[in-house]
Amino acid sequence: GIRPVYNACSRLIDVSVLSGFEKKTAVYYEDGNITYKTLQTLVNQTANMLKALGLEMEDRVLIICHDSPEFIYSFFGAVRIGAVPVPVNTMMQAGDYEYYLNNSRAKALIVHHDIWKKIKHIRKRFIYVREILIISDIATDIHEGALNFNLQISEQPVECQPSLTCYDDAAFWLYTSGTTGDPKGVIHLHHDMEVSTSHYAKKVLKMTEADRCLSASKLFFAYGMGGGMFFPLGMKASTILVKEKTTPKTMFQTIEKYKPTIFFGVPTLFGAMIEHVDQSGECPDLSSLRICISAGESLPSSFSKKWNHLFGVDILDGIGSTEALHIFISNRIDDMKEGSSGKVVPGYEAKIVNEQGVELPPNEVGDLIISGDSIAQGYWNLHEQTKHKFMGKWFHTGDKYYRDKEGYYWYCGRADDMLKVGGIWVSPIEIENCLLDHKAVLETAVIGETNDQNLIVPKAFIVLKENFTPSEQLKKDIQQFVRKNLARYKYPRIIHFIDELPKTATGKIQRFKLKELLHS
Ligand code: 3SK
Figure 1 (cartoon, rainbow, N blue to C red):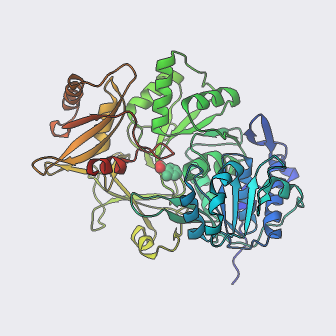
Figure 2 (figure 1 turned 135 degrees about the horizontal axis):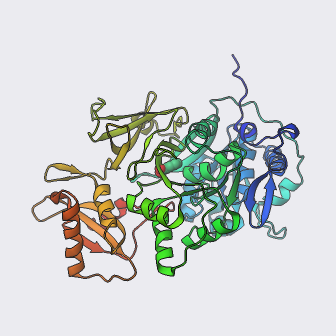
Figure 3 (figure 1 turned 180 degrees about the vertical axis):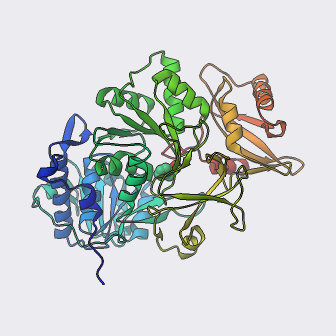
């Protein structure tokens, strides 16, 4: 039979006159506010434009868009007509966009004008693209063979019936890059955003319409998309969008200006913001915040302590993934264990298993697998990898964890980052957390290096704080510090001072790049 209609756009965006949300601010952006009513209208106009251009259900629409209202219009405009938006990272090279466009077989491309300028010379290599829409509010910013997005939508009717999609239709894709191979298209369904909002935003963050969210992570990442778009819109709260690059300074300025109540960050950003205060001696007013969230990597407890001391607000650490759409294990506002990722978010299940898939008892390190209704359908056109990771209702996260007797989960690293030192498994995260407690260490990443005797030893890459200079004596001090605070065999036998650690755009440290350095 025909399944009931369920369209993620109408579920998250639509408001009626009676609801009282029409006049409420949905988006704060560059000194302008967009109400829910205006947002709904502009999403409808975008949907009508895509329809008029011949886009149909299931057609992919690639979106290369900075954090701005147009991101939301394009994303939900496509979802409304049953097309499938594929937002991608705005910081990539031309060749990466060629890959995304051809791999997704997107029929339309919506792109900010500054990025279009960097890729238009390879236009002929985009095999499936029929329509190109350039986001630019300068009407004269016309590009050959392309349409002006803003002009086009302004000419469209303001009403648009959502298409007859159902709960399990594909709604959007997100690309995720592993440590090897090409990025994989993760297929999310129409119900995923609402499920994640109900499990995490509502039950863990206790988000209400009174909240104002700011996400340091950009909207094209799953983490940023939740914190900066579908949580606030789904809860009829407000979001603050910042087009500029995320830095400690832009974040402090934005928080002081727009007074968010919830701030989504990542550990390296929290660390850099703390360092900014230490260096400048000025402590910005963050009193509007009722809670901060950290994900992406495990948050060192030294950061949460210092942050709370400086700003009087807690950071809730959690773990999520692009495949799960958002956070599935998290600390709670009234139940936090510093250094842990917290407990399973209501609505999800988690298990720690060994290589045979047998569940392990508390305190034993194994593979974290999870289940829950926001987990993606699978990877686009990657049948083997899909079978490997999506096993029945369980998704294999690729993370090593243990659960303590009280039900808190402790991150031990990616499955492929764990080190076997002297026959004992060692978590690089534990060593990194200890190193971060040393007064000279700003950032660090630990990997395994094979020594002369063919044994794996921990090697620490360390970025020093401003007032410290690299020396042999400092290396010895740091090694001694770890030996004093952790089991002796865990101390880094090799220390390498470095100016900067390789990171993803969300601030995740790319340990695999450091490993490549060893072999180059
Ligand atoms: O890396 C994470 O922890 C994460 C959290 C939420 C959504 C997506 C991701 C990758």
